[in-house]
Image 1 (spheres, helix red, strand yellow):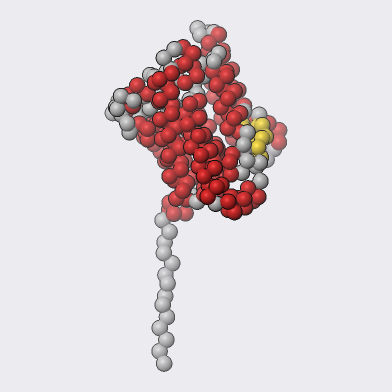
Image 2 (cartoon, rainbow, N blue to C red; image 1 turned 120 degrees about the horizontal axis):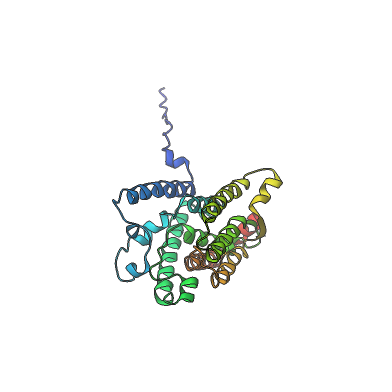
Length: 283
């Protein structure tokens, strides 16, 4: 009697199959930042071909920048701060909603955040006060923070009581730097201050990976529930922006947050039992 055995040879997993989607997004952000920076330095592309310009996109020009601006950053430390945030927040969101939903949610949050920024800047940013709050029609916007605020908004609804740390040190450093630049625009110490702030931001971010409590305090972490995080991360900066010009796109953050909150409430209503389990599991 013959026996036939089916031999199942294990399929080789592709490299990207072994990575989380969030990790892939981080890799794409880093690679495109390098590529775009090189192309701009070689004058193959201009910054207007990549960054979101409200005056352009609302006139129907360079509409692709709603997408490209999501994967470009102003400088290395802008990239570092956003990827640090994405590493923690995005990993948690992907675990909760899954790989496919995470992809579309991330992309939609970033694109809608760009649209909100462009609309507010174009229609309300014509005055000095309006430009400080909403951004001016000609102020370029880049970065993943709009999408990241979408992720934070979702978590604020899905797991509102889970404790999280806001690394406040880099934000305080940027605000103090902006105040000094406005108060002493011709000071010879501005270059030195830029170097000090850059080094501090670098040290503050990586101190959060330390197991030493004294090292962690360098970043000035503030513990809070997730529902409070988006509020603390947006409203104080808008108020400060009334008096000091900050290089922060608050309206893009707000746009991403709206998408996150809306999707979070949709999931809680559509999947009541699963949402209740997730709140219990992660809180």
